[in-house]
Figure: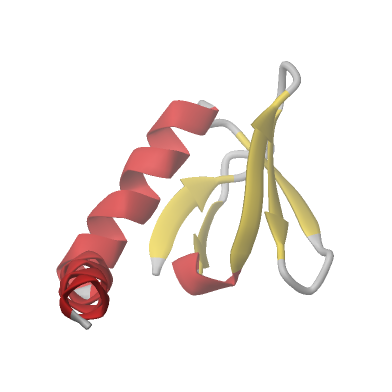
Length: 74
């Protein structure tokens, strides 16, 4: 989960695995795979860093590299 701030100042935790897109136009919109869109105070780059950190924390990035290396050997 990542914690972001809604426009009204409240914190909301999002499941980073459910995030489909992050766009900044100029507000930052986080779109979930369900189609729900949330406007947050953080910049898009900050949200992306949080997502990457979460992926590293749960081992997704390492698992992806391991799979790619295994596929290359085949």
